[in-house]
Picture 1 (cartoon, rainbow over the protein chains, first blue to last red):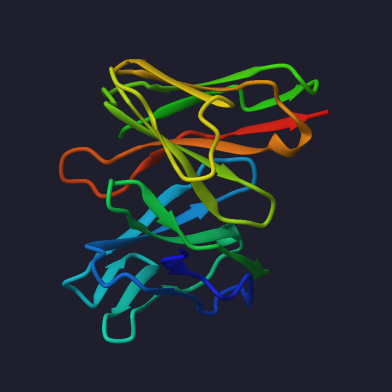
Picture 2 (picture 1 turned 90 degrees about the horizontal axis):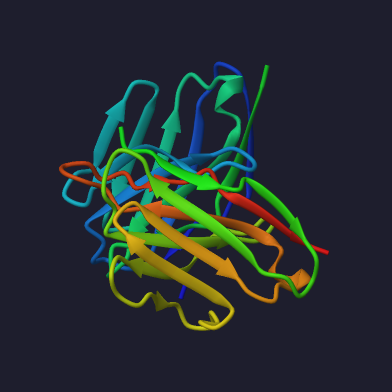
Length: 111
Length: 116
C-alpha cells in the first residue's frame, strides 16, 4: 500500500526560478511529513518537515505547504540553485516509527 | 548532530557468498535501526526493523533467513545478506529514528551491493 505518492518522477527548472515538488498521501493519521534530499550513492538528508496541524513551514529558500483536505503537500524552493539538483523524497512516519517514502522526484536545476 | 556511519559504501561479491553491512551510531545510542533497500529508480522500501537486544521484525516479503539482522549493542546494527544472488543487488541504507525534539531521521550513507 503506497501511502505516500509522488507522481512526478522528474522536474527541470531554470536557475533562479521556483521549483515546486508535489506529494500526495492517503493516510489521514500521519502526524507530520518530511522532505528528504538524496544524492546518488548517498543516504537521504533531512530537509524540512511540517506538522499535520500546520499548513505552512518555511526555512530559508524552502517552504512546505500542507493541504489536509486534499491530502497534498508541496515543497517550494525559491530561488532554485544548481546545487539543489537531487532526488527529493516526501515521507511520513509509519505506525512503528519507520519512514514511508514516496517514489521520489528528480530535480534538475539548469544554470 | 546525530551521525550514523555505514560501511562498506560499496561492495561487489560473487553469487553465493555473504556480505555484512554495518551501521554505527557515532554520538548517540540507537535502540532501533531501520533497514531500507532501494532498487534503481524506485523509492526506499523498508526491509526490517532491528531492536537492540531483541529479534528484528521483517516486512512482508522479506526473507528472514536471507537478510540476517543483528543489533547486539546500542551503537551497532548489522545486516548480513546471505547466499547473495544478482537479484539482491541494490542500495541498502540504515536509519535511526529522531531523538529529543527532532523529527528528522538520520540515515547512513548507504551501501551499494553488486552481486556478480
